[in-house]
Length: 539
Image (cartoon, rainbow, N blue to C red; front, top):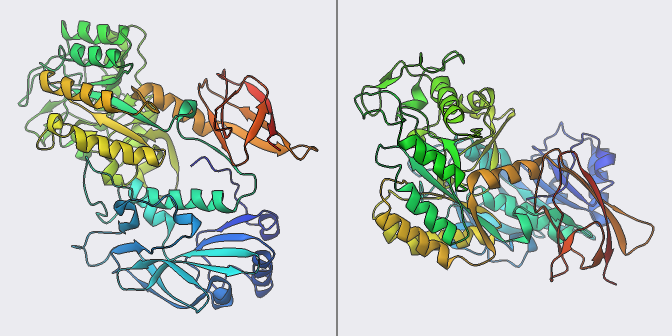
């Protein structure tokens, strides 16, 4: 969401700011009564708190609840009809009601259903009628209380360790994790003073459509030219994920050789980018042995015995050797993007990708992880530590019945829903045929609004990585209508965009001010470059 924050265990330091998030929970050991009194005074004087899982009776009055009941049997959450500002981005049915876990599972994540007091407003209910999200106004300030853990409704979903909370697998709008990010964004925008945030899309645009093709069959190479022509004609580009199959097995013959290699080289020379799609493209990839990390061509000799079984195959081998082959056969190629065959993901994949020289992955679907924003893949798909790998989950694919050519209107609806939230949409089209699919892709591209970027996955992923790693600050000056925006990037980046609450009159430093006077696009930054921009607000 591009919201600035810092983490502290020092309560006085936290209360020196207008907005405070209490995380991960509050029980009788979290605060003393004196500290609780300070929290209450903070809110009365105009502070704003967002908290989750408050259990302590000493804060019942502040947060507006009488009691709570922890359960693992609540499966759905529905937002109330309310004008509270933190729900302003939740305007679609898929956002107004979310699924916490499959109805077929008797127990899922823990939730805490609250009984509100007479002063609190309930913003969302669980399916048993208890309050899931409530708010309470105290003096000049306001508090919000969520009866769920953000770890469970965001990170657990992104890890794909949820309790089958998705309502679809692919090709639908599924914002189950994103609603909580949007709520936090709306909370920040509603109560922050002179707020500013780093936008998710470059160049002041609304969204991005990331195009990709999986090349995993001997006859899938030549049709790539047709897709590339369509994309070039529509000011777009795409990433081709190549299966580097150099062995014959029970599933198919080898095809990573001329003339297919010449086709890949021509696609790359024409402006397309290239990623890895493994070697044997096995449905059993998520169950392969890890391997040594020393696998190399030609000694690595994996073979599929069937769609789900293989011999001589390892996770390291599929990841490492496919990169070795692509980098060796394509001039100027550095393979940094991976997509697993059949989107089967082993828990060790993030670390294997890191150790093999990758930066990005696209092996989950957005519906399955309930998120349409890129995110850092945790190591071991766990809860302790992020890896260096960024995940770009697949939004739209072409194989689900009745096929992509007959689903363009549906795909466009999903893309526009994501665009409303400033999220991206990833499209996967297999290049096994181009007569119907390339025409459908052209139809989709021609209907896209002009404020949705259409680009390849590698280009956008590099932007996202640089955006995620920049250091920035906005400092008021002695003049009330002026501020200093300082930005430093370790990596080259084009199109960084900041959104301001206050309208801007002028800005220095080569930045571009949009006509709405609230979006500022920075000039291109070189690695290690530090820029300072003087912002003059409208009076």
